[in-house]
Length: 544
Image 1 (cartoon, one colour):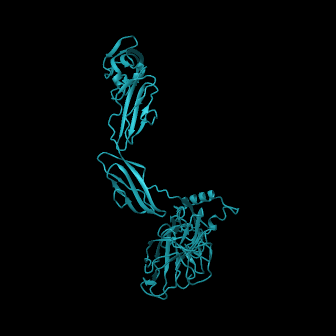
Image 2 (cartoon, helix red, strand yellow; image 1 turned 90 degrees about the vertical axis):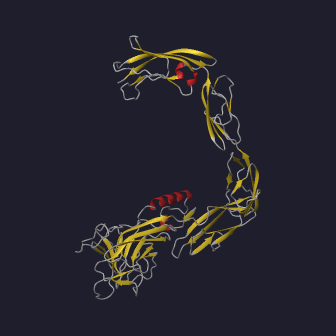
Image 3 (spheres, rainbow, N blue to C red; image 1 turned 90 degrees about the horizontal axis):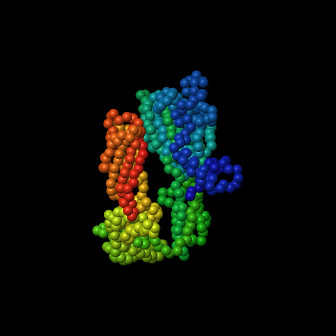
């Protein structure tokens, strides 16, 4: 895990000399999640302007360290007076602007949060050259600093080195705007931005765009709609975990792509890499990306391992008619050779048997093995009968297949299970090649109201939804029903309907009143160890 050694960000949050790692991690996670989508430029479109129009013009000139608003967002950086103007905004009412000749002008901005060390940011903005300029220029720079710095000078700020600059030869458009997108890596702690031309104007830095040249190279840059966002969090410098074989050493270095001005390791080494021998449990590295940047520290845990390779699974299963391809995790291993001939890590096993793989590792030559077993294709029916009678000590058994896993509806995970009573029992068997679901009905002590589902209300209004009444045999119990009789009576005892077909419902005609009716259900069904005849009576209501 990486730690930013940045007192500007965290220095005022804790008064004591020590910070518990838990709180530091929480702070970093919360800060990262919030800042990732936040525009860090204050007043990015120049729309807030409290002092605009106060001195007889429609905009405002910014003087040294003084801005257009309180608290300060944009401010003047040098003796040159940069501006808020309404002449030609990219959007809204105002834009920012500055001259870059003679008395060079700069716009300063107070960022809404400091930049994070090592993180990558993208700055986007719209810039162009104002309509009354005679020249347009290139290489507008953006310099990020700590603190509200001002410079009582009139010329260009050549002493500063901007992090990003528009390309040399890419001249700003005349009387219009162009969008620029520039990326950079932050040193950490920068909380102010300065925008302007940081070089003297020389031949090739300007292009004449006016109609008639009147004097020096007068150029006024318009800028609007700035956005500064973090696009990539600071990268890890080294792995979180380093494994070393006992009795061996290992070399680790900064991750690819990290360029640092200075590097220091926990043992004092200042090279890009370090050799570890396993005597320490932790190693840390601290880097400074460039002069003036805050240091970034990252820590790795060292684990010393014995030579115990685990490249392969212990067992694999071969399905009938299929070729089994195996690809072990080969990270850190080289020069593989299989016992059946192939010299690449990925191979196809030719059939059942014991296969060996040898490879070179940082710990020396390793050898691992795998058993390849022929797997059975599970049959569609696992249980040999559809139903049976319940009795104490009843055991249900499924055939055992190589590599198969079993799951019964009561939670049993073996090939055998002991039912606790009558009912429908389900079995799911998952093999190496397929999965099968089977069921069995356990009969015994079955009552009529357990054999049927009987509604107590229906709505015969012709919409084909709940228009009829009939008792429904519960799923899986249909084979138990032998004889069936259903009769419907009104409240005066007159029989209105009769059927011996359990699939035939009572569909009353339109003259049948909206009231409650009586039903009588008589059924003969198989119940261990006999056939049983029962009568069940009840009431059902019609609602229209």
